[in-house]
Amino acid sequence: MNNNSENSNFVQSVDKALEILNALAEYPKGCGIAELSKQLGLNKSTIHRILSTLKNKEYVIKNDENSKYMLGTQILYLASSLKSGIDLVNIAKPYITKLVNKIGEVAHLCIPEESFKNIIYIDKITPNYENRGINMASKIGKKAPIYCTASGKLLLSQFSDEKIEGILEGINFIKRTKNTIVDKESMLEEIKKIRINKYALDRIENEDGIICIAVPIFNSKGEMCATISISSVILFNSIEDLLGYKDELFKISSTISKLLGFMP
Image (tube, rainbow, N blue to C red; front, top):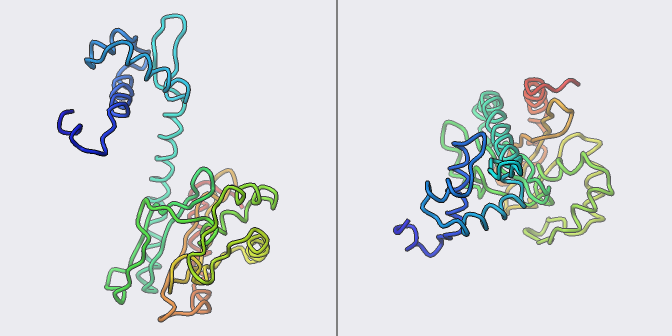
């Protein structure tokens, strides 16, 4: 811990909380404060305060009969979210990779952030040859705004206008390019077109010079859970060129959706 404490970004209370969670993982039937104190070398009052905070956020639960603590439902939620993302990447990657190598463009697999204010890139696939020296800002694990990406706008389109307005209410619109939509009224008009087309476009709205087309992926509940997108540079391709990939993208997304249990 001494090495870590020299790091200005190190937060001791968070480190202790993580130590407690890791320790509780070894006790599926629960563990008391005294036992945790002995195992971790932390005083009981510190452990009690941390456990109370974790309990409030449902990361741990307390058995009132024996005063023992165990991992809570929020841990299960995080684990299931991670597993879902990993499963989706493993299922989708072969199909997307084949298309990427065929057309020579960059593809992304995206999911929504829980708040639906951002998308998260869970995979980025580039051709197996040099793609004309193009460097896009996207990275696996990175977030991008929901309102100015093809994937984000497509994910929003599954909701009612009322719910979309609620989501957009908490967003600070930033004009990232001259084409970025920065008001709710224009966004709702855009969403109407997306609902009709079943796909979404990014017309240089998120990153200068970059255009994109996105199609949906559905899960076993019939929910739009993710998107596949193809991105390119306006110097080399037009929106019309990207639309030429639409049928192949829909074919791939349909296959992946069925593998996830979606029944059309």
